[in-house]
Amino acid sequence: MTDTTPSADLGASSQQPAKAWSGRFSEPVSDLVKRYTASVFFDNRMAEQDIRGSLAHAKMLARQGIIGAQDLADIERGMAQIKGEIERGEFNWNLDDEDVHLNIEKRLTALVGDAGKRLHTGRSRNDQVATDIRLWLRDAIDQILALIGDFQKNLLDVAEANAATPMPGFTHLQVAQPVTFGHHLMAYFEMTRRDAERFADCRKRVNRLPLGSAALAGTSYPIDREFVARELGFDEVCYNSLDAVSDRDFAIEFCAASSLLMTHLSRFSEELILWMSPRFGFIDLADRFCTGSSIMPQKKNPDVPELVRGKTGRVNGSLIALLTLMKGQPLAYNKDNQEDKEPLFDTADTVIDTLRIYADMITGIRVKAGNMRGALTQGYATATDLADYLVKKGLPFRDAHEAVALAVRAAEVRGCDLPQFSLDELRAAMAHVPGAADKLADDIFGVLTVEGSLDSRNHIGGTAPAQVRAAVAQARTRLG
Image 1 (cartoon, helix red, strand yellow):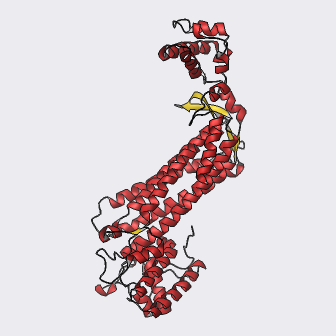
Image 2 (cartoon, rainbow, N blue to C red; image 1 turned 180 degrees about the vertical axis):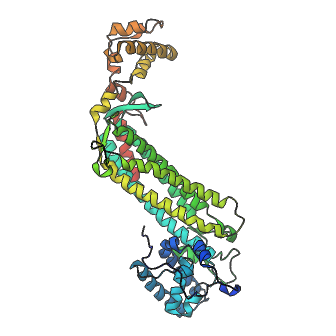
Image 3 (cartoon, rainbow, N blue to C red; image 1 turned 90 degrees about the horizontal axis):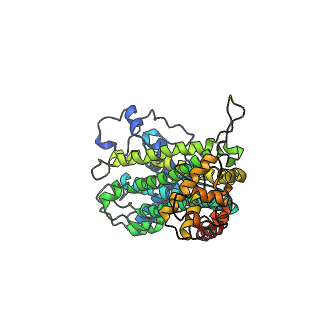
């Protein structure tokens, strides 16, 4: 997204120009209050959306005969000039004009005269800002959905390349059973698939038009809200004017979806950090995502995943900030709502930046397959396969579980893995469980191999290499 923060001076004008609402007041606002209440420092990034909304509103006013055709032409001409000034960084954002809306309106009036003053007919800043922020957020969601797709496509490439690369699967961070690295990565595809669904669903509720609600009660002018909705690409209008100007559910919902996405990327980051540690040694990250130490020359620190992990707390904080902002507000609009933008903007920026860098970082993972396989010899990873073998031979599962537990204990005493036992040694280790030893035959050693374990889980959602490849193919079809 484009940050329209200007290089021009945002300081207050020494001439103390009249506010758009100043006729009611007997003294000017103090400089401290101006700075405390102004939002132009951060909401000017919605300038493009503000212009877009104003042009649709002006077109509707002319269509309804509320303003003249010449007024519409002047407004369109003035807005085109303002848009160019903003894009070139020439627009003079002024603190005295409080926010993006009044800054643009004042400049428009200076350019086209009374036509600029007529633009605000039939609307309030309350429904104007609610419209702008929905337009802005809709654009941000579209960008995020595209970036999730980029991340997923790169993830699928790495998963497919490692569909048969064995590694330990963990529970409680202890070696549990063999899986493939591709299968492990596909878990994150599923997480981000749900994330994409949440953002797409959130977009439906973002994409409702509040404009036309005016301050809170609607307007007496003969407006056509459905026309404006069509002009701006909204699916429908907001059907209650009080709710329309005061609702920020859509922003909270967006932040909630963002928190879940960042939580998933934070979990992935934690694994990348662990896997990169020499204690695991499962992967290495490309140098462009790491930094060194100012004192320890051997260090290669995974700074990017660490920052993703840290920035997740920032996004979670924005969600709590918005929930807290709204929890005690009476209907309808309150100035509190001005505080919705900075957490919302920061959340979107963080998510967008994180997805961009993660999509690239995935391609920079170097898999250390030998270390992954070696780790499978350290935790009796095929013990469950041995229990399953006994069950398939007719032993009740609880007896099989007990027999294998005894075998594992014997292997720990000897300092070896289960496949290193001879058939007689394995039978002896299980001798205390009636019937267990009799079930063992030479075919057990095929079951205890890593490949045997992986291949046996050949069903939808399983870790067998064939199923991982099928899952990747299905995922590519979903992405299109």
